[in-house]
Image 1: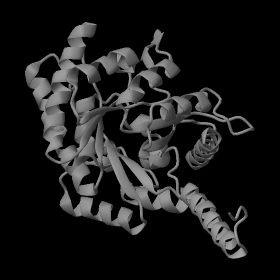
Image 2: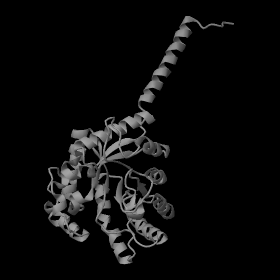
Image 3: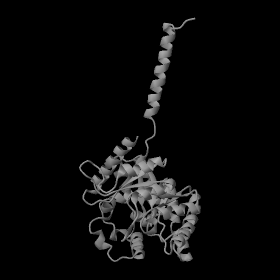
Image 4: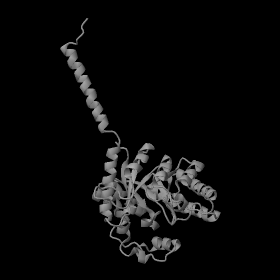
Length: 330
């Protein structure tokens, strides 16, 4: 019996083994990242709005602001960056290939097919994917008044349609309501479920962000998700938006962990950075560990809101931090 292989067999086995090793290396190199990075348009809101925006909008109630944004947007938006150039800016300035729009920057254009086509063409031309539209100023989806709640639901229809046209997967909404904890949950479930039913026809998800008031209570918002139990309804956990009122804050880390099981998008809020590139108010390692532990593999959107750094520098700093923490967690 031959114990040792012949030279020819040895070479054959060695070649096979080496091929398997190289194949394994190749597979490892192609492994998807823990998460992908996108850019939220709100990170550029000062460039969109322009200087003295607060003075121009002073004293306006939501209805007046909606009217101006719909009919005479230049009265409010006088910045050096237009919504049409968002995708170009994301790619050429930051090498980011996925974006999240904010509806107030093209508020009266949701059903303007010519405008939406140009918006889509510019994104496609840069190889940039449109992920979602963040929607505000369209009414409270948990309004106690049934007629106003229905109006709020229907006011979001056009953004669902626009998101589908642009190739997005979701629309981000707010779960604004009033009343007791249970009353607000039931009202929000009703409005969100009705909108999710409509969005299902367009293959669009409805995502709720922790965005002030009771929606910034992770336990409450997760209870809304559980009660609604709608396949098109999910959350968009924001790392920083856990201010319930002027006197009450919810724990950021607890809130993110509670919302991640329902997440279909994530917002990496940032404010400022130290000389080592760490966010000074939020522990990104801890937050992103919660994101990845939940099994989330989608996009994490940069949403810089700081004032010390310029918006461009803040975006770059947030991107660098996300990349570093992602590598560490990997």
